[in-house]
Length: 363
Image (cartoon, rainbow, N blue to C red; front, side, top):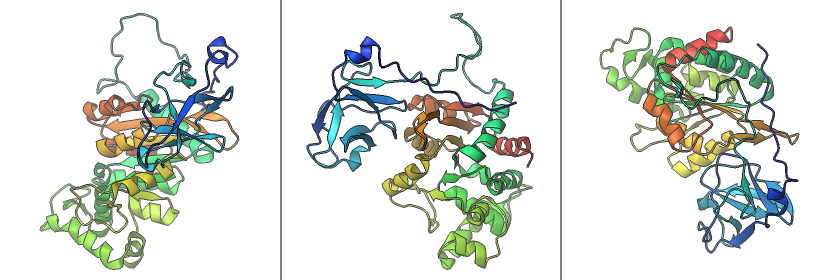
């Protein structure tokens, strides 16, 4: 099976819908962090703004932000990053009426299917067959290793099993992981697995609770903090396995953003959520594929800052592939409910998913 990117279809700007449209209107931000009245909120889709008769694409978009015109380009900014006087586009229509065009159909494939109004099993659930999805992911990841940037978003469940830790480590070591986004728990329990062979006090293979095992994760955090950083802990304690170990060895960036329930946390964990969000978005800005596994909070956060497209260095526009993997249908469906409409869900145990992907890639 040969993987091919879906070709982006540009809008036909010669149509009267576009030629007759007015220029988009901007208004200055009245204060820092405050948008003007009637501001236009951005989406995950490509959005074009008519400026002096020309349709300009907002090249780095994200959901629930505003578009700012500056130095001949359009920048998408969070409200918290607005400065007084920034020229913010206004208008609440999306089909050229206000000189703004939101374009959700640029990557329509027209794959098979049917035109009937009624059909069974159209939603993705625990009854869905995911064999084709797995095959697509194998080919996609092989392509992305050479041509893209793959961001993985992981919850702690991925660190609770020895096989899934080993499988993901193989993905890292073989170039299928370009960045990792997670919380304090994923890193803590993965390092605990390498340091004490447990996760939350349970043996990572047998799942048997160990004597005084409830100390193990905080003992691990304490020891990392003693050494001052995760890389120093890996070196000084002779850590030689696991997800975080592999990221350290391959120099793969990992962004750990804290939550109010965290123990410790580890030294690298962002305690300020907005600084953490900025660090996550630095990775997402490069992403061409995003795979979220067993973390509703971090999946929705990442989904909210991931557009459906990416403008590549050569100026071409390509699709961003987004997968959400969770054993809970509620978790994967909630991502779509929060606006990440291009996310494809896979309802399965994430430990099995990681192992299957690793094996499918021949690792």
